[in-house]
Image (tube, rainbow, N blue to C red; front, side, top):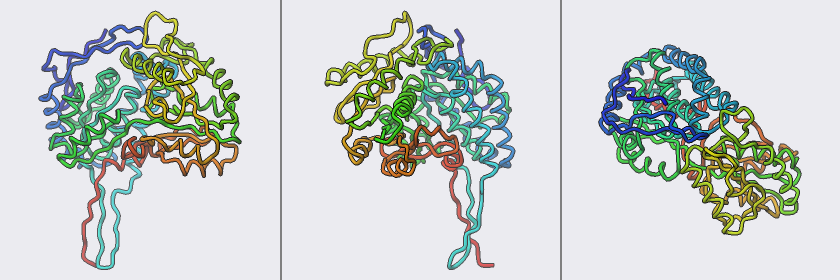
Amino acid sequence: MTRYPSHYINGQWVQARSHDTFEVHDSSTEEVMATVPAGTTEEAEAAVAAARAAFEGWAALPVDTRAAYLDKVSAGLKARMEEMATAIAREVGMPLKLAKPVQVGTPVWNWANFAKVARAFTWEEEVAGPMGRSLVVREPVGVVGCITPWNFPLNQITLKVAPALAAGCTVVLKPSEIAPVNAMILAEVIHEAGLPPGVFNLVNGTGPVVGEVLATHPEVDMVSFTGSTRAGKRVAELASQTVKRVALELGGKSASVILPDADFEAAVKGTISACLLNSGQTCSAHTRMLVPESRYDEVKALAQAAIARFSVGPSLDESTKLGPLVSAAQRDRVLAFIEQGIAEGAEVVAGGPQRPALDKGYFVQPTVLRVKPGDTLAREEIFGPVLVVLTYKDEDEAVRIANDSIYGLGGGVWSQDIDHAMAVARRIRTGQVDINGGPFNGNAPFGGYKQSGNGRENGKFGFEEFLEYKAMQLKAA
């Protein structure tokens, strides 16, 4: 077991004031793999003060200098990929063979990519008007509080911290207390990269303590939050008192719409893969599969065959395709949802509430249930390996069902007619739509409509979230 006794504040590791700690559990074995300190209000305030003091100097550096630091962080993470991937596989439960490219490889790419985005960005432009001209410049928003989740922990940190730093902002990070080991390793990498003191700070802790300092502190100019919709509402409410900029990436209940002319075998297999990635612990997971009512029996057989290929096991086992959930609490929550669905009359297509035959670990078997649009499982975000199937009579009904949600984060459309698929995708009120299983694009904007949040991440779109406009009005030449 590894003990982390310190927070990272003002360029150094600072011994925690409190003796309280969080235990980090290996999700496959339930053993305590690490402890991190529980941060206090005072420590969070010290980190904010350090970030504020460092802001002016960091923002004044040439863009290429800041970008070079990001390149160093990317290289440092790549050098520690095995260690980082193993830590995340144990913390979160994603199989190691996936954790390497997804949980670590993606952040390695993103740190370097945000350096490229910053270098290529148009920082100022002249704009002419009927009475004069203006020089419009882009400047960093200031001190940014980053509050991040446990499901893709390193990448969610990266999508906030890397563009904020590249933009010239300074940062205070509060990582998830459930999966914080990756954040501690990242802090070591950032320290080794030699960033000036106060530019990056990390304080472990809970949302009600450290998170609320970041949301309310008058010296924090922006808070970027990823997590549940309930917690996001609280962050926005607190941040409104100082009129901070707020970026929220929240929950989802994404629909995969399989149109009658689709390749059904590919569509069902692709939807299930998009649902079960990271054991379903993905905000944009395709957790509702919408299929023609007349083809349900065919879909049912295809789903049963696809689910059977997902071997459940420990995250470090090379043969595992589906690992455990992150915690006992999350496992129990997902099982309770399955049982509620069955109680409401859902048809069990595959899986169910019976636990896999494993002595230890927070495992839930992959489950497919047929439900009705008004059922709890058709509306609530489950955040586990659970797919619900809904049937529709015609295309208009399919679109209505897809849009009948408080969320609007991801989704998919399947059709052998690409133009038709894109026409349907345009009718779905959601931030991203995969056409026939189109892969995730790290330069395309990621974010949601409705209660899935506001703001965007990835590429230049995520970078611009951390910038302000300034117009300098000039007299005519």
